[in-house]
Image 1 (cartoon, one colour):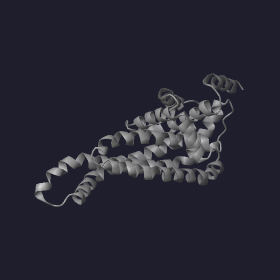
Image 2 (cartoon, helix red, strand yellow):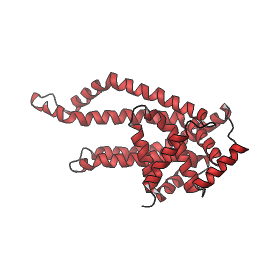
Image 3 (cartoon, rainbow, N blue to C red):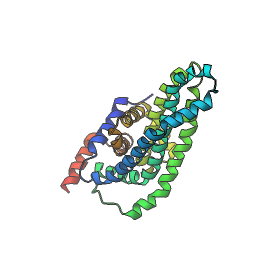
Length: 261
């Protein structure tokens, strides 16, 4: 496998550092607000309903026999983890679909900035025009993602294989985070969904390193609110440096030239 996982992780860190930069930060606002709103809703829903859902699932799995009730304590962590993963990914899917046009605009403006082009404000017409294309790409990601996720979830209930299933789920999550966010700059540059996946496979370790740090960031309270825009910016840096032939030094010179102009 080609690539460097530390280089991939560094793309995300550079995206995080670029969030407050002048000319970029106001394009970050909408994805950030969407993230705050939806993850706040997810947390509230979990606190309000999680106990009920766990009890319902356990009751569905286990017969109502007293001598089997000890299994509830054994199955409780597994069922709780399943509920957490389901709610987390459900809200993530909704957030990504709603934010997709804004993330596309953010990626476009970051690429302009990296190339030393003057960044201009986007009107609502430009954002609305992006909606059909970006939503279609999100659906493509779901069609790719859901069958593989379900397969890995089934593995968790198979003896022996269930031991390695959480590790495989994490690796797959890292891969999907790379696909999710690297798709924005590639879609902006008219790279098909299939070609985008093939391109990431050519640098699989770099892609997994990038997606891995994104996945870890999403598990950290408060930090996870910044992950979406930071990942979009980091993925755009990834695209420009790894796939267009521009180096970090070239981009720095162009940005400096753009500021002088």
